[in-house]
Image (tube, rainbow, N blue to C red):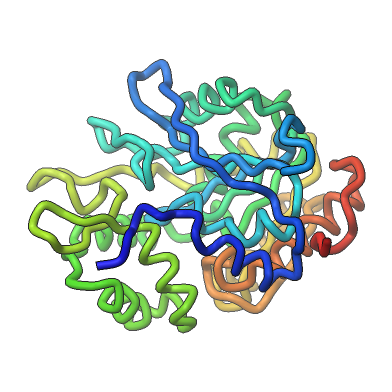
Length: 313
């Protein structure tokens, strides 16, 4: 069985694949929040000047973790933090299993305070996008720009709930290869190397020696279900924004052309970029996502000294 906790061993390969010769340095930090839980974060620092403040915050989607943004963070090349959302990765589980943005936003804001993250860009994927909108509404002074990755509040709520229920009923795995095979069958993706990396980061050894997910959903007591909230509730948060907004969608993702039209009608000042990917754009098209973020940020003057393409050093 591979060492599942050697979590940063593949970063040099990701840097080489991204054309980055002097990549950011990653480290893990856990923050105790006022609700008594822990929020775990990956801090991305410039090895030449580790004291530089984080300029970007990355928030992942349902059922995955902060590592999903590794290659994008390396390519963007800006000091950053990537959080494991409550109930995911190495962050603690909530007793009430309520993972709606309204429930988790206070803990995430407390973690950002503890990490001394200054105002900057917040990038959110899927559930993390809805949470990013809540953070921007709750603490507008923290957010200078917002990036939504393949998520619109109009994504069907029944589909959101169906995904959560599927996570709750997911059975343990006998091997990482089985995790990959199930992901391919579920059309999560088709790149085995990418899926294997995700499998390694999102699973751990269970008591019976089989692999189980790190997130809370399949570990709920019998008869209990988790909540991820109503995504449509994010519309007031987004419509109240007074900062630049970018939507990066996968052409085979959850934001259909019809949803893009509605999104543009409700948020006419937003920039929309489409890349070739399924829903998890940051794992399937990480460099394209990084390019979209850097070009948009440069065009809006959001980051000092940022290049108009992903960093190549």
